[in-house]
Image (cartoon, rainbow, N blue to C red; front, side, top):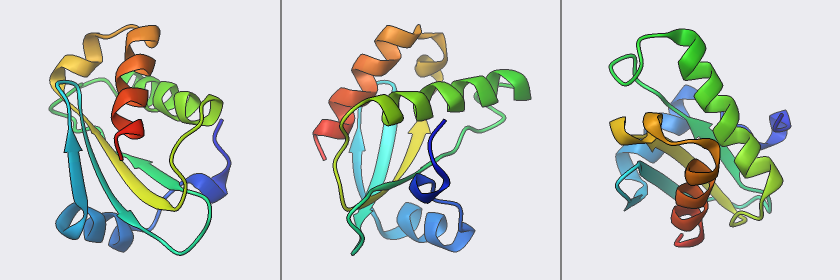
Length: 107
């Protein structure tokens, strides 16, 4: 599990990133981000109910993404909001990891 200090929880910050942040896209994810003054990056993951009806499956998907972030080297000094697309739900863990890391390393 990712430590609390790496999670972006304030709704105002997330809304600000979604409105004004830079964007990077792939077939499976949209990543919005902006710079911050801290050394560590912070993350938020938003999964719409339209994407997956079951809360259990949405939360499992979020946990998988957070675990990928925890286990791998990610860019520092950013606030990042990850928005999965419909196609991402069908990926297995290894494919999910590959696609997400590719997109995060582009930042």
